[in-house]
Length: 63
Ligand SMILES: [Zn+2]
Image (cartoon, rainbow, N blue to C red):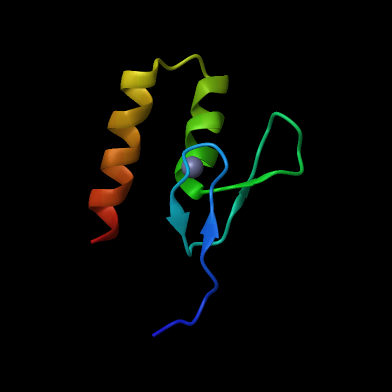
């Protein structure tokens, strides 16, 4: 068991223990990896629906 401190993502309000991502909007806010991925994807012009699908795929591949 890893004993990482839980962090709360300010964007989605979710508690997470994965290494945080840095918000691209201000380069200092720590956000959860999911929001980090969404922000990265939004740069490519993907819609929210497409972003959610990719997040889902990432979560499925982890298990
Ligand atoms: Zn988040």
